[in-house]
Image (cartoon, rainbow, N blue to C red; front, side):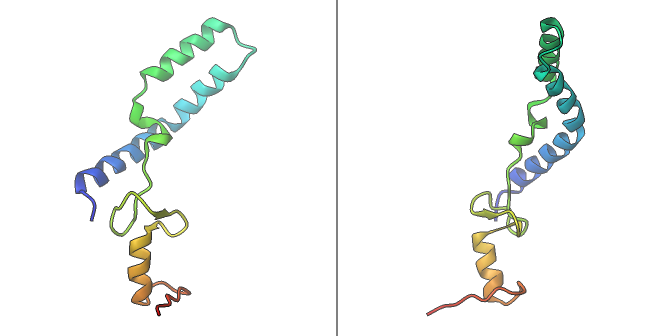
Length: 101
């Protein structure tokens, strides 16, 4: 089981990403628009830098929904490889047959 503080920090990041997503998208569009004057694009770049860093989508870590483990994460199932193996062995995941020999 992962540290509760790490899981909570990741949840806070997810909320910030959702809150600032539209603002970040607007500023990035201004920055990338070559038809605008350089001063306006530079102001947009400064405004983007003023936003919280944890509001960036890249700062969110994919974690297991069962254990909170940050590595070995399957996006499609939202769980780690270890949790997948354990739940598969117990027969709790439909369609998954774990073989052992």
